[in-house]
Every structure is written in structure tokens, then in C-alpha cells.
Length: 496
Image 1 (tube, one colour):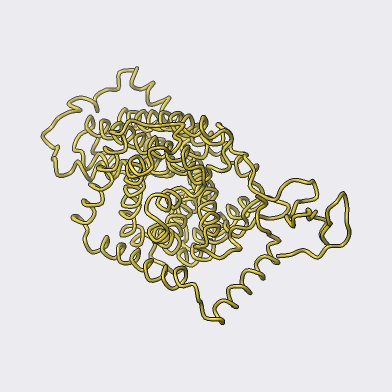
Image 2 (image 1 turned 180 degrees about the vertical axis):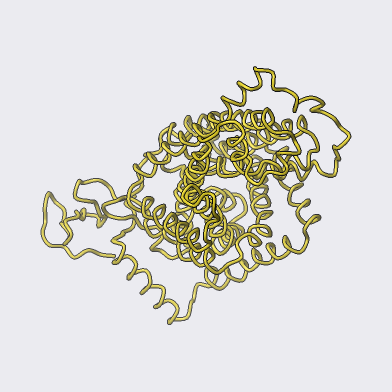
């Protein structure tokens, strides 16, 4: 969008809204700052993004999937530790990619660099039409459920009330991310500390019980009579799902201050904290509940609090809700940058790569998920959608790490400020593809449907991207769409 100039000031023109237009036609705001995304993600903010998106509702609600499939208390704790180490391997692989390919966008960008635009678009397409809206809707529904629980106790919560609370939470997250990068990061730090406080409320009394001698539930912890090797892959699948989120800092690499230092450091610190928290939280659960009681519980943290904390247990649902809100906020912040980069590469409408002239946020890229998320919230079968789309996450993450290995051989001279030993990406890549194979074997119908949805990205690529000569009516419609949104949202191309 071109601003109509009113006068000349200090060698440049001043637009009608008071924003300065320099001699080369780029736009600055009234404070003479470049209109673009600044490097506002410090080490602490990077750690808060990773921890804040990894720790969602899962550790508070249902860690029983790992116990169920591992067969014993001791084996379940080993699986939690092993999944933390495997997730660290994946995160370190992404740290290498993030420090040698210094572009935001995460999975999309790395697949683009290694395997070209077509594969990158297929990943983007699956994210945009199904995976991300469904994932955001599910975590938002958990927020709505738990934030209302103290108000309705002991009655059940009306489903429409949950959906309305969920809709308000999604809207507030989108608004926050579109208004200020700084305040988004500050609130993410606050929410991350809230999660760690919630976990410490479980860990501290649990460990205290352990020191008091409450160890009966750890007797015969490694009893192998109920352990079946066929169940171990499913236990690892549940564990890796609980750790998912370590890759979100790579979505905002361009906004990280001193990425060569801060990205690897933030990843290592975050994964160490999360792994310790997860393992100690499960130890705390077992000091109060037997394996049988844990398997019977619908919300493990709530059951734990009722047994040990008395009236204070009413605070647990609030902490779970804050944890969910932190995951929503961190995920929205990171994903908007992927859509921003995809637009910059020509895979999405141009307006998504434009920045608000005052707020310095990619406002259009933030709101792109809003319509689909709200639609799925009120009319879609979100949980089944997540079931058959979940394996695609590990498929594409495996492809990304395979791309790292491929780039080692095709671009050996690429500067790599941070380089991991080759066995780390190899082990992680094999783990990802094994989980994909397991999904296809254990649930071929749902995973097949998810795979079919992702394959629609190939014809979409050729229709919208590959063919240079679009019909004139389509080109006019796209131009009109870009111009209208640009005017409504007050966004302009970022200054380079």
C-alpha cells in the first residue's frame, strides 16, 4: 500500500497518518523506527517460549498413557527420562539448523532449504487447514474447561459455557499477539513462571512425602511381569507428545537477540528444566497414588491435590488453565512467524508478510488461524482430527532432521556456528520415522485420512503457486483482498 504524501520533512515525506516515508519509499513510524520485526527475544524470553509451549495441560491431567503402556512405575520413569533425552536430541538438531539458516519459519523454512518449495508448501498446507487450528482449539478447550471449574464446582459445566470461554481466550491471545511483541513476551514469561510454580506445588509436598518414608508405591517398581515390549513404542509415543514444543523458538529466529549463543543455550536450559520437572512431578504423584489409582484418575493433578492439599486443591484447575493459556500464547506467537515467512516466499497472500506501522507486529499473520480455529471449535470434531493428524507432526519433523543430514553432505561449507555430532540427528530421525510407522500400523484408517489431507497440498501447490499465469479474475480478487486487508489492518511491507 502506498501512502499519499502530505509534506516533506528532513529529506523524506510524511504520510497522511504521520508516518514517515523515506527517500527510497520505505515506511517508518512516527518515532523514526523501521517498520519491521525487531530482535526482542532475549535468552529469558526464548526459554519462556520453549518451556511455556512444552508444558501444557498434559503433565497435570493425564500422564497415565506412559504408565499404561510401560507396565510399571519404574519403567514409566525411565520412559519419561528417555523421551526427555530424545527430545533434547531433536532440539539440538534444530539448534544447528537455526544457527546456520537464520530465517524464521521453523519446519517450513528448513524443508524449503533442504528439499525445495513444493515439500515446504505441503507442510504449510497441512498446518494451515487442519493441524494448527485443531491443536489451538483443543488446548483452548482445556483452558475453558479448567478456568470455569472453580466457578461451577461441584456441578458439571455447560458445554456452551466452555465454548464461549474458549472463544474469548482465543480472541484475547490473537489480540495480544497483534498488539505488542514486548507484552506478548512479558506475559509469556509470567505464564511460564506460573507453570513452574504449579509444578513446584506438586513436586515439593510430593518429595517431602518421599523423605517421610512414603515409598510403598515404589516397591517392586521394576516388576517386569506386566511389561510388554509391544507396548513400549506406544509409551514413547505418549512421552514424545508430552515433550512436543521444543521447536517453537526456531519459528522466531530472526527476532532472537544473538541467536548463535542464545538459541542453543535456551534449548539446553529449557529441556533440562522440563525433563527434571516431568520426572519429579511423576515421582510426586507416586508418593500419594498407587499405579492403579493413577490409571483410574481422570485428572491426575486434581486427584493428587485433593489427597494431599485439602482446600487448596481448588487452585489446581486455575494453574492448569494458566498453563494452557501459556501454550496458546507461545504457539500463536511462533506460528504467526511461519505464515509471515511463507508469505514472504510467495506461498501465502502478500498481506501476511506485512507489518503494522505502529505496533511492529505481523498482524495479518497472527489472525490467519482465527477463522479456522473458531469454525472447528463450534462445528468440528476436533479430537478425531487431532488423532489422524498427529502422526504428520513426526513425519515432517523427521523430514526436517533428515534435511539437516542431507545439508551436511550437499552444503558442507555452510557456516555452522553450532554443530552437533552426526549420531544425534541420526538417532532422532530414526525415532521419528519409527513413530510414523507405528501410527500407520496401529491406526491405519485415521493416519491414512490424515496422510490424504496432506497430499491435497500437491494439487494446491500447482493451482495457486506453480502456474505463473493465473486467470485475470483470480489475480484481481487476490489484489483486491491484499489491498483491502492492508487498509483495514494498517500494515505495510517490512523495511529491509
